[in-house]
Length: 232
Ligand code: DC
Image 1 (spheres, rainbow, N blue to C red):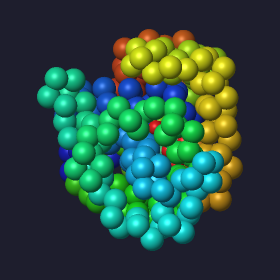
Image 2: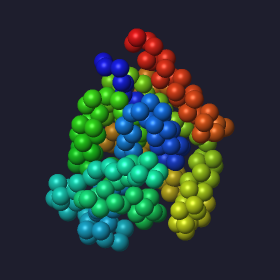
Image 3: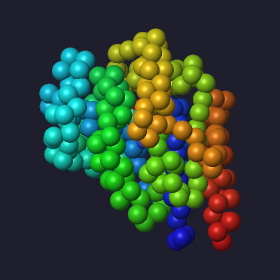
């Protein structure tokens, strides 16, 4: 191991794991990858390329064009956050809309979609020094990660955070709609046959229901320091 470790952060939808991963990466000068954004990017591509008609996903069509989908991240110089590019176009706003959230869990359950993204994610993490968040990061993408965190929060707290986030972005929705979507996605994500969301035995649980962002960050940062000092 070099002096930079791999940190895997998993958890349910809208539990604050991307926020934690981003802030932790910033503090450690590591790369941050929001793997959910990549599943959202594929979903947007599917919606815009007739691979989803009405409520029906045309799996075969999506799989036949999957190699045409190029995903990458670009740092926004103002917010200092990475934003998703889909075939060169910045789609950071579109991938967060309810249109995409409504289909992303079904798209993420497709084996070929997961194979493509897991292999791209592993390439991004080859050198360590990465914080990646998602659902299968500690279990599948980086099973040997030096630190695995499993983030949770109470459902109504997650709904409120997600609702406020969408309000801030002026995306029209209701708390009921957000709650229905979160519960549905959590169910699909944890019961699908392809790498479902699980807490691995070696993951440390952070329940951030009562934490501020700063408190959550300092809990995680201390855990990183513990790991780093155990290797020193
Ligand atoms: O973290 P998020 O809500 O942006 O993720 C969007 C969807 O992608 C979520 O419903 C589950 C899926 N996902 C996944 O299956 N595996 C990952 N590593 C990340 C996200």
